[in-house]
Image (tube, rainbow, N blue to C red; front, side, top):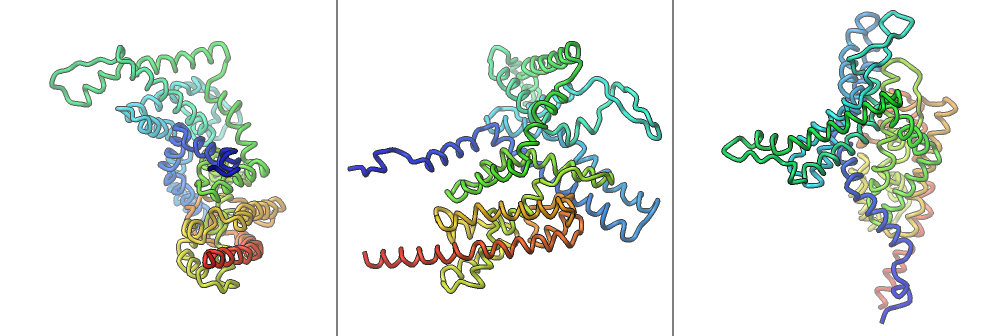
Length: 441
Protein backbone atom coordinates (compact mmCIF):
# COMPACT_ATOMS: atom_id res chain seq x y z
CA UNK A 1 0.00 0.00 0.00
CA UNK A 2 1.44 3.39 -0.96
CA UNK A 3 1.66 6.14 1.61
CA UNK A 4 0.18 9.59 1.02
CA UNK A 5 3.43 11.11 -0.25
CA UNK A 6 3.97 8.33 -2.78
CA UNK A 7 0.35 8.56 -3.91
CA UNK A 8 0.83 12.23 -4.70
CA UNK A 9 3.79 11.44 -6.96
CA UNK A 10 7.19 13.11 -7.00
CA UNK A 11 7.50 16.22 -4.84
CA UNK A 12 8.81 19.61 -5.99
CA UNK A 13 12.43 18.87 -5.10
CA UNK A 14 12.38 15.65 -7.10
CA UNK A 15 10.89 17.39 -10.12
CA UNK A 16 13.31 20.30 -9.84
CA UNK A 17 16.28 17.93 -9.55
CA UNK A 18 15.17 15.84 -12.52
CA UNK A 19 14.56 18.93 -14.67
CA UNK A 20 17.95 20.46 -13.77
CA UNK A 21 19.76 17.19 -14.48
CA UNK A 22 18.09 16.93 -17.89
CA UNK A 23 19.02 20.53 -18.72
CA UNK A 24 22.60 19.99 -17.67
CA UNK A 25 22.86 16.80 -19.71
CA UNK A 26 21.40 18.33 -22.87
CA UNK A 27 23.93 17.45 -25.55
CA UNK A 28 24.68 20.99 -26.73
CA UNK A 29 25.18 22.30 -23.20
CA UNK A 30 27.28 19.27 -22.30
CA UNK A 31 29.40 19.83 -25.41
CA UNK A 32 29.86 23.45 -24.41
CA UNK A 33 31.16 22.42 -20.98
CA UNK A 34 33.47 19.86 -22.58
CA UNK A 35 34.86 22.50 -24.93
CA UNK A 36 35.58 25.01 -22.17
CA UNK A 37 37.26 22.31 -20.10
CA UNK A 38 39.43 21.41 -23.10
CA UNK A 39 40.76 24.93 -23.71
CA UNK A 40 40.98 25.95 -20.03
CA UNK A 41 44.80 25.51 -19.95
CA UNK A 42 45.10 28.28 -22.55
CA UNK A 43 43.34 30.80 -20.30
CA UNK A 44 45.29 29.74 -17.22
CA UNK A 45 48.52 30.19 -19.21
CA UNK A 46 47.28 33.64 -20.28
CA UNK A 47 46.66 34.52 -16.63
CA UNK A 48 50.16 33.47 -15.63
CA UNK A 49 51.65 35.45 -18.54
CA UNK A 50 49.70 38.56 -17.52
CA UNK A 51 50.86 38.14 -13.91
CA UNK A 52 54.53 37.69 -14.83
CA UNK A 53 54.47 40.49 -17.40
CA UNK A 54 52.93 43.08 -15.11
CA UNK A 55 54.03 42.05 -11.61
CA UNK A 56 57.26 40.03 -11.84
CA UNK A 57 59.15 41.65 -14.74
CA UNK A 58 58.67 45.25 -13.48
CA UNK A 59 60.50 44.27 -10.27
CA UNK A 60 63.87 44.09 -12.04
CA UNK A 61 63.44 45.72 -15.47
CA UNK A 62 62.42 49.10 -16.80
CA UNK A 63 62.09 50.96 -20.10
CA UNK A 64 63.16 49.15 -23.25
CA UNK A 65 64.43 46.15 -21.27
CA UNK A 66 61.01 45.72 -19.66
CA UNK A 67 59.29 45.99 -23.05
CA UNK A 68 61.58 43.30 -24.45
CA UNK A 69 60.79 40.97 -21.55
CA UNK A 70 57.06 41.66 -21.87
CA UNK A 71 57.12 40.65 -25.52
CA UNK A 72 57.09 37.06 -24.23
CA UNK A 73 53.81 37.54 -22.35
CA UNK A 74 52.28 39.61 -25.14
CA UNK A 75 52.79 36.80 -27.62
CA UNK A 76 51.16 34.34 -25.21
CA UNK A 77 48.21 36.72 -24.89
CA UNK A 78 47.92 36.87 -28.69
CA UNK A 79 47.94 33.07 -28.89
CA UNK A 80 45.37 32.55 -26.14
CA UNK A 81 43.04 35.41 -25.16
CA UNK A 82 43.14 37.16 -28.52
CA UNK A 83 42.02 34.08 -30.45
CA UNK A 84 39.58 32.68 -27.88
CA UNK A 85 36.60 32.78 -30.26
CA UNK A 86 38.66 31.27 -33.07
CA UNK A 87 39.68 28.36 -30.84
CA UNK A 88 36.24 27.79 -29.35
CA UNK A 89 34.38 27.19 -32.62
CA UNK A 90 36.31 24.08 -33.78
CA UNK A 91 36.65 22.66 -30.25
CA UNK A 92 32.90 22.96 -29.69
CA UNK A 93 32.28 21.35 -33.07
CA UNK A 94 34.58 18.46 -32.19
CA UNK A 95 32.96 17.91 -28.78
CA UNK A 96 29.43 18.12 -30.16
CA UNK A 97 30.10 15.73 -33.06
CA UNK A 98 31.86 13.31 -30.72
CA UNK A 99 28.96 13.41 -28.25
CA UNK A 100 26.62 12.71 -31.16
CA UNK A 101 28.84 9.75 -32.18
CA UNK A 102 29.45 11.35 -35.56
CA UNK A 103 31.96 9.43 -37.66
CA UNK A 104 34.26 12.35 -38.53
CA UNK A 105 34.58 14.88 -35.65
CA UNK A 106 37.84 16.34 -36.99
CA UNK A 107 36.16 17.35 -40.25
CA UNK A 108 33.29 18.88 -38.25
CA UNK A 109 35.85 21.01 -36.41
CA UNK A 110 37.35 22.17 -39.72
CA UNK A 111 33.90 23.07 -41.07
CA UNK A 112 33.12 25.09 -37.93
CA UNK A 113 36.41 26.95 -38.11
CA UNK A 114 35.88 27.76 -41.78
CA UNK A 115 32.31 28.85 -41.08
CA UNK A 116 33.50 31.28 -38.42
CA UNK A 117 35.96 32.86 -40.86
CA UNK A 118 33.25 33.03 -43.52
CA UNK A 119 31.15 35.04 -41.08
CA UNK A 120 33.89 37.56 -40.30
CA UNK A 121 33.45 41.18 -41.50
CA UNK A 122 34.64 41.78 -45.06
CA UNK A 123 36.22 45.08 -44.04
CA UNK A 124 37.17 46.54 -40.66
CA UNK A 125 38.39 49.85 -39.28
CA UNK A 126 41.93 49.86 -37.92
CA UNK A 127 44.11 52.52 -36.33
CA UNK A 128 47.62 52.60 -37.80
CA UNK A 129 50.50 53.00 -35.36
CA UNK A 130 51.02 56.65 -34.58
CA UNK A 131 47.88 57.75 -36.43
CA UNK A 132 44.99 59.65 -34.87
CA UNK A 133 42.33 58.57 -37.38
CA UNK A 134 41.25 55.04 -38.25
CA UNK A 135 41.20 53.70 -41.79
CA UNK A 136 39.15 50.95 -43.45
CA UNK A 137 41.03 47.80 -44.40
CA UNK A 138 39.97 44.65 -46.24
CA UNK A 139 41.48 41.20 -46.29
CA UNK A 140 42.45 41.21 -42.59
CA UNK A 141 41.20 39.53 -39.43
CA UNK A 142 41.19 41.44 -36.16
CA UNK A 143 41.88 40.18 -32.67
CA UNK A 144 38.70 42.03 -31.65
CA UNK A 145 36.54 39.60 -33.63
CA UNK A 146 38.71 36.55 -33.01
CA UNK A 147 39.24 37.08 -29.29
CA UNK A 148 37.11 37.68 -26.21
CA UNK A 149 34.52 39.81 -28.02
CA UNK A 150 34.00 37.01 -30.53
CA UNK A 151 33.75 34.19 -27.99
CA UNK A 152 29.97 33.97 -28.08
CA UNK A 153 30.02 34.11 -31.86
CA UNK A 154 32.46 31.20 -31.81
CA UNK A 155 30.07 29.27 -29.58
CA UNK A 156 26.94 29.86 -31.67
CA UNK A 157 28.56 29.44 -35.08
CA UNK A 158 30.38 26.33 -33.87
CA UNK A 159 27.09 24.77 -32.76
CA UNK A 160 25.04 25.82 -35.81
CA UNK A 161 27.63 24.88 -38.44
CA UNK A 162 28.16 21.49 -36.82
CA UNK A 163 24.45 20.73 -36.65
CA UNK A 164 23.98 21.63 -40.32
CA UNK A 165 27.01 19.62 -41.40
CA UNK A 166 26.03 16.52 -39.42
CA UNK A 167 22.49 16.60 -40.78
CA UNK A 168 23.78 16.74 -44.36
CA UNK A 169 26.41 14.08 -43.67
CA UNK A 170 23.76 11.70 -42.35
CA UNK A 171 21.84 11.89 -45.63
CA UNK A 172 23.02 8.86 -47.58
CA UNK A 173 22.09 10.45 -50.88
CA UNK A 174 24.80 13.10 -50.30
CA UNK A 175 27.60 10.65 -49.51
CA UNK A 176 30.16 9.73 -52.17
CA UNK A 177 31.46 6.18 -51.78
CA UNK A 178 34.48 5.83 -54.08
CA UNK A 179 35.16 2.25 -52.94
CA UNK A 180 38.34 0.45 -53.87
CA UNK A 181 41.62 0.24 -52.03
CA UNK A 182 42.17 3.87 -50.95
CA UNK A 183 43.53 5.31 -47.70
CA UNK A 184 40.82 5.89 -45.07
CA UNK A 185 41.47 9.65 -45.02
CA UNK A 186 40.93 9.89 -48.79
CA UNK A 187 37.77 7.79 -48.57
CA UNK A 188 36.41 9.96 -45.75
CA UNK A 189 37.15 13.19 -47.60
CA UNK A 190 35.14 12.10 -50.62
CA UNK A 191 32.43 10.55 -48.44
CA UNK A 192 31.66 13.89 -46.72
CA UNK A 193 32.59 16.23 -49.57
CA UNK A 194 29.08 17.31 -50.57
CA UNK A 195 27.93 17.96 -46.95
CA UNK A 196 31.01 20.16 -46.44
CA UNK A 197 30.33 22.11 -49.63
CA UNK A 198 26.63 22.61 -48.80
CA UNK A 199 27.32 23.70 -45.22
CA UNK A 200 29.91 26.30 -46.17
CA UNK A 201 27.80 27.52 -49.09
CA UNK A 202 24.87 28.14 -46.73
CA UNK A 203 27.05 29.95 -44.19
CA UNK A 204 28.56 32.08 -46.93
CA UNK A 205 25.11 32.91 -48.32
CA UNK A 206 23.98 34.12 -44.88
CA UNK A 207 27.12 36.22 -44.58
CA UNK A 208 26.55 37.78 -48.00
CA UNK A 209 22.88 38.55 -47.32
CA UNK A 210 23.73 40.24 -44.04
CA UNK A 211 26.40 42.36 -45.73
CA UNK A 212 24.33 43.34 -48.78
CA UNK A 213 20.96 43.96 -47.17
CA UNK A 214 21.84 44.63 -43.54
CA UNK A 215 25.24 46.27 -43.84
CA UNK A 216 26.34 44.08 -40.95
CA UNK A 217 27.75 40.63 -40.16
CA UNK A 218 26.78 37.73 -37.94
CA UNK A 219 29.63 38.37 -35.48
CA UNK A 220 28.30 41.85 -34.67
CA UNK A 221 24.69 40.62 -34.52
CA UNK A 222 25.52 37.85 -32.05
CA UNK A 223 27.64 40.17 -29.93
CA UNK A 224 25.08 42.98 -29.74
CA UNK A 225 21.83 41.02 -29.64
CA UNK A 226 22.77 37.93 -27.63
CA UNK A 227 26.15 38.05 -25.96
CA UNK A 228 25.99 41.45 -24.30
CA UNK A 229 22.37 41.27 -22.96
CA UNK A 230 22.97 37.76 -21.62
CA UNK A 231 26.31 38.71 -20.12
CA UNK A 232 24.90 41.84 -18.48
CA UNK A 233 22.20 39.84 -16.66
CA UNK A 234 24.21 36.74 -15.77
CA UNK A 235 27.15 38.81 -14.58
CA UNK A 236 25.11 41.32 -12.60
CA UNK A 237 25.44 40.75 -8.87
CA UNK A 238 21.80 39.70 -8.44
CA UNK A 239 21.74 37.53 -11.57
CA UNK A 240 24.99 35.76 -10.77
CA UNK A 241 24.11 35.11 -7.11
CA UNK A 242 20.69 33.73 -8.06
CA UNK A 243 22.03 31.33 -10.69
CA UNK A 244 25.01 30.32 -8.58
CA UNK A 245 22.82 29.66 -5.54
CA UNK A 246 20.53 27.43 -7.63
CA UNK A 247 23.57 25.41 -8.67
CA UNK A 248 24.78 25.08 -5.07
CA UNK A 249 21.31 24.04 -3.93
CA UNK A 250 21.36 21.28 -6.53
CA UNK A 251 24.66 20.08 -5.09
CA UNK A 252 22.96 19.56 -1.72
CA UNK A 253 20.64 17.15 -3.56
CA UNK A 254 23.55 15.21 -5.02
CA UNK A 255 23.59 16.89 -8.47
CA UNK A 256 26.89 18.60 -9.25
CA UNK A 257 26.65 22.40 -9.39
CA UNK A 258 28.30 22.53 -12.82
CA UNK A 259 24.99 21.31 -14.28
CA UNK A 260 23.71 24.87 -13.80
CA UNK A 261 26.77 27.03 -13.24
CA UNK A 262 28.96 25.43 -15.87
CA UNK A 263 26.29 26.05 -18.47
CA UNK A 264 24.73 29.41 -17.60
CA UNK A 265 27.52 31.24 -15.79
CA UNK A 266 30.95 30.04 -16.85
CA UNK A 267 30.87 31.13 -20.52
CA UNK A 268 29.81 34.73 -19.77
CA UNK A 269 31.96 35.05 -16.64
CA UNK A 270 34.91 33.80 -18.66
CA UNK A 271 34.31 36.54 -21.23
CA UNK A 272 34.55 39.10 -18.40
CA UNK A 273 37.70 37.47 -17.06
CA UNK A 274 39.42 37.45 -20.42
CA UNK A 275 38.54 41.09 -21.03
CA UNK A 276 39.95 42.00 -17.62
CA UNK A 277 43.21 40.21 -18.40
CA UNK A 278 43.45 41.86 -21.80
CA UNK A 279 42.82 45.30 -20.29
CA UNK A 280 45.39 44.72 -17.53
CA UNK A 281 47.97 43.55 -20.06
CA UNK A 282 47.33 46.70 -22.12
CA UNK A 283 47.49 48.93 -18.98
CA UNK A 284 43.88 50.02 -19.49
CA UNK A 285 41.03 50.43 -17.01
CA UNK A 286 39.77 47.08 -15.73
CA UNK A 287 36.14 46.83 -16.90
CA UNK A 288 34.50 44.17 -14.69
CA UNK A 289 34.29 43.09 -11.06
CA UNK A 290 32.41 39.82 -11.48
CA UNK A 291 34.37 37.11 -13.28
CA UNK A 292 34.71 33.37 -12.87
CA UNK A 293 37.97 33.79 -10.94
CA UNK A 294 36.32 36.39 -8.65
CA UNK A 295 33.49 33.94 -7.96
CA UNK A 296 35.86 31.04 -7.29
CA UNK A 297 38.22 33.09 -5.14
CA UNK A 298 35.63 34.61 -2.81
CA UNK A 299 32.64 32.28 -3.16
CA UNK A 300 34.30 28.85 -3.42
CA UNK A 301 36.93 29.01 -0.66
CA UNK A 302 37.85 25.39 -0.14
CA UNK A 303 35.41 24.36 -2.86
CA UNK A 304 31.72 24.86 -3.60
CA UNK A 305 29.91 26.20 -0.54
CA UNK A 306 33.20 27.53 0.92
CA UNK A 307 33.44 24.34 2.99
CA UNK A 308 36.92 25.20 4.28
CA UNK A 309 34.96 27.28 6.80
CA UNK A 310 33.08 24.17 7.93
CA UNK A 311 36.31 22.18 8.30
CA UNK A 312 37.88 24.89 10.45
CA UNK A 313 34.73 25.09 12.56
CA UNK A 314 34.86 21.32 13.11
CA UNK A 315 38.52 21.40 14.16
CA UNK A 316 37.96 24.27 16.61
CA UNK A 317 34.55 23.57 18.10
CA UNK A 318 33.44 19.99 17.40
CA UNK A 319 34.00 17.19 19.90
CA UNK A 320 32.30 14.53 17.78
CA UNK A 321 34.89 11.96 16.73
CA UNK A 322 33.16 11.09 13.43
CA UNK A 323 33.05 14.76 12.38
CA UNK A 324 36.71 15.29 13.22
CA UNK A 325 37.71 12.14 11.35
CA UNK A 326 35.90 13.30 8.21
CA UNK A 327 37.44 16.77 8.55
CA UNK A 328 40.92 15.27 8.91
CA UNK A 329 40.47 13.31 5.69
CA UNK A 330 38.89 16.24 3.85
CA UNK A 331 41.25 19.06 4.84
CA UNK A 332 44.11 18.19 2.45
CA UNK A 333 41.97 18.15 -0.73
CA UNK A 334 39.96 21.06 0.71
CA UNK A 335 43.05 23.28 0.70
CA UNK A 336 43.05 22.82 -3.08
CA UNK A 337 39.30 23.48 -3.36
CA UNK A 338 38.36 19.82 -3.83
CA UNK A 339 35.54 19.23 -1.39
CA UNK A 340 33.64 16.14 -2.53
CA UNK A 341 34.97 14.27 0.59
CA UNK A 342 33.18 16.67 2.93
CA UNK A 343 30.09 17.10 0.71
CA UNK A 344 29.44 13.37 0.50
CA UNK A 345 31.38 12.22 3.56
CA UNK A 346 30.21 14.57 6.31
CA UNK A 347 27.66 14.71 4.56
CA UNK A 348 26.16 17.96 3.29
CA UNK A 349 24.06 16.18 0.68
CA UNK A 350 20.49 15.77 1.98
CA UNK A 351 21.59 17.18 5.33
CA UNK A 352 18.93 19.86 5.85
CA UNK A 353 20.75 21.91 8.53
CA UNK A 354 23.95 22.07 6.44
CA UNK A 355 22.13 23.02 3.24
CA UNK A 356 21.52 26.54 4.56
CA UNK A 357 25.14 27.69 5.13
CA UNK A 358 26.31 25.74 2.09
CA UNK A 359 24.07 27.85 -0.16
CA UNK A 360 24.23 31.08 1.85
CA UNK A 361 27.98 31.40 2.56
CA UNK A 362 29.03 31.88 -1.11
CA UNK A 363 26.40 34.63 -1.42
CA UNK A 364 27.85 36.38 1.64
CA UNK A 365 31.45 35.92 0.48
CA UNK A 366 30.86 37.23 -3.04
CA UNK A 367 28.80 40.16 -1.73
CA UNK A 368 31.52 41.17 0.75
CA UNK A 369 34.26 41.00 -1.89
CA UNK A 370 32.06 42.91 -4.32
CA UNK A 371 31.51 45.67 -1.75
CA UNK A 372 35.22 46.06 -0.97
CA UNK A 373 36.01 46.13 -4.69
CA UNK A 374 33.36 48.76 -5.43
CA UNK A 375 34.65 51.11 -2.71
CA UNK A 376 38.20 50.67 -4.01
CA UNK A 377 39.60 48.88 -0.96
CA UNK A 378 41.05 46.13 -3.13
CA UNK A 379 42.00 45.72 -6.77
CA UNK A 380 39.78 44.01 -9.32
CA UNK A 381 40.57 40.43 -10.30
CA UNK A 382 42.86 40.49 -13.34
CA UNK A 383 44.64 37.12 -13.36
CA UNK A 384 43.03 33.83 -14.34
CA UNK A 385 44.39 31.39 -11.76
CA UNK A 386 43.79 27.61 -11.52
CA UNK A 387 40.69 26.89 -9.44
CA UNK A 388 42.82 24.58 -7.26
CA UNK A 389 44.92 27.51 -5.95
CA UNK A 390 44.78 27.40 -2.10
CA UNK A 391 42.89 30.09 -0.13
CA UNK A 392 44.70 33.36 0.69
CA UNK A 393 47.26 32.65 -2.01
CA UNK A 394 44.42 32.66 -4.55
CA UNK A 395 43.22 36.18 -3.64
CA UNK A 396 46.79 37.51 -3.73
CA UNK A 397 47.53 36.08 -7.19
CA UNK A 398 44.10 36.81 -8.71
CA UNK A 399 44.43 40.51 -7.91
CA UNK A 400 48.04 40.65 -9.18
CA UNK A 401 49.58 40.89 -5.73
CA UNK A 402 47.11 42.94 -3.68
CA UNK A 403 47.50 42.07 0.03
CA UNK A 404 44.22 43.82 0.81
CA UNK A 405 42.40 41.08 -1.13
CA UNK A 406 43.99 38.53 1.20
CA UNK A 407 42.53 40.41 4.19
CA UNK A 408 39.09 40.41 2.55
CA UNK A 409 39.28 36.68 1.86
CA UNK A 410 40.40 36.05 5.45
CA UNK A 411 37.42 38.09 6.71
CA UNK A 412 35.08 36.00 4.54
CA UNK A 413 36.54 32.81 6.02
CA UNK A 414 36.03 34.07 9.58
CA UNK A 415 32.42 35.04 8.83
CA UNK A 416 31.93 31.64 7.18
CA UNK A 417 33.15 29.83 10.29
CA UNK A 418 30.66 31.81 12.38
CA UNK A 419 27.87 31.01 9.91
CA UNK A 420 28.59 27.28 9.72
CA UNK A 421 29.02 26.84 13.51
CA UNK A 422 25.36 26.88 14.69
CA UNK A 423 24.28 24.63 11.82
CA UNK A 424 27.20 22.30 12.61
CA UNK A 425 25.91 21.99 16.18
CA UNK A 426 22.35 21.38 14.97
CA UNK A 427 23.54 18.76 12.46
CA UNK A 428 25.51 16.91 15.13
CA UNK A 429 22.50 16.87 17.47
CA UNK A 430 20.27 15.55 14.69
CA UNK A 431 22.83 12.85 13.88
CA UNK A 432 23.06 11.86 17.56
CA UNK A 433 19.28 11.63 17.88
CA UNK A 434 19.01 9.56 14.70
CA UNK A 435 21.71 7.18 16.02
CA UNK A 436 19.87 6.84 19.33
CA UNK A 437 16.58 6.13 17.59
CA UNK A 438 18.18 3.45 15.39
CA UNK A 439 19.78 1.88 18.46
CA UNK A 440 16.43 1.77 20.28
CA UNK A 441 14.73 0.24 17.27
